View 1 (cartoon, rainbow, N blue to C red):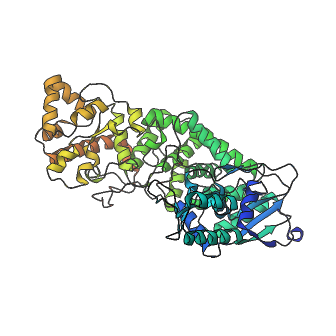
View 2 (cartoon, rainbow, N blue to C red; view 1 turned 135 degrees about the horizontal axis):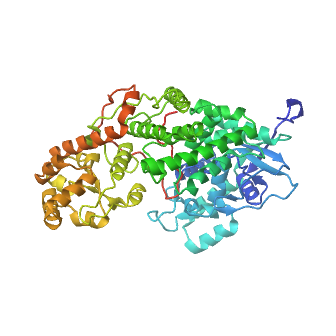
View 3 (cartoon, rainbow, N blue to C red; view 1 turned 60 degrees about the vertical axis):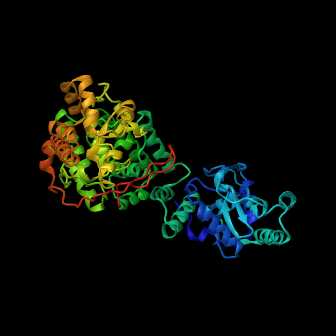
Length: 569
């Protein structure tokens, strides 16, 4: 229960120098509660903030909550360890202004590349110290600004001229004198503090829904972020990799009886802790079943091989409602997977689609339908001739799944391609343009047309390097001479290249090859979709296919959080 209005004291307004605030953070007097989101500002936003301080522009007030309550919180900020809270000692939790405060602490004291910031005294602007950054006596590290000793040491060492020294001194005085308004809440409960935080952020700066719902459901006994992490550990235990946190939030919402949409997710805030934990537990058990299905029935050994993450959300709810499908039901789920992976049903999944999808799962799980009804449009064979091949492109993932389903053989060695390695997308050498791009460029094929999905096959790195940029008629003739025509044809069939496409390649006829290969890919996909085609209310896709499809942004770093890339909801 929250604190009644009669018990809440009026907020306490004060002002404080930013140098004092930074010291208080490092000393553990100012703390970031765990329901706060992680640091998300870009390097450019940090520079803008510092420039606002330099110009004496207001940077907004901070909202803090003074209490002796010990909340879950981090003891690291800007790469620096802070002093842990002492039992019973009052501290100030930041409810609004975390990004600004972390940026100031990082710029003045932080450790790590993002906090290597300097001020160009000649151009009078802040910059990050990269390898391309200018050097010289006019470049002053920002962390020297608030320390007299560091400033004097820098002046003696770099010996800037008198004008630059005056500018440095003026900037130092500005940073030491700049003050920020603070509003401090008193006598507020843990639950109310999280609720205040949620209300401020839901109407202000755009906030990730996972962080928003985390704040709205947070208590000292329940942290949604930790619960989602436990859910993701289910995938880790099966070595499946990870989908994004929002997709997992959808599975929790559906397990709680609400639905997949953002509107449904917000209803999680109305649940008690035990109800939330039960929904998480149910979603976790169903997620394990979904992973087993995807690994064994579809052949997706890792989450990043999924054409659409939201397919996973629907599958988790299906296996929650139907823990032990019959063989016929397994086949129907497989057909549903291929149908929804091949159309654009999940490309911009909307609330208007989510309700019918949930109903279809419920009807199927209850045995009232033999197929999972969907309005997903049937694919067109032109897809393979126009969709670009790229790491995070749904048609590309579908192509790779189709090829891996056939257990492809390397054209030269005859060995089965390591599909698991290829599906992890870590080794680009597993894929090869059947008509090499360099060859097509010499033949005048326009950019983009050479990289369409229909021109890709799986090969070992050794064979890939051997083919290089040779024209198909040359390398195919060599392979036929070495291994025999029948052997080569058999290996090509495992790569979904049949006789008509093979003959076109021997003529170096790229247009004819693409047409024939696309027909083979389309026919194989329709075989996998099977009777699920009758459950599709969308008919054949009428969405115009672009000649060149741009890659969506890819998260930086091998350990980066996956991104919900297939929903507008």
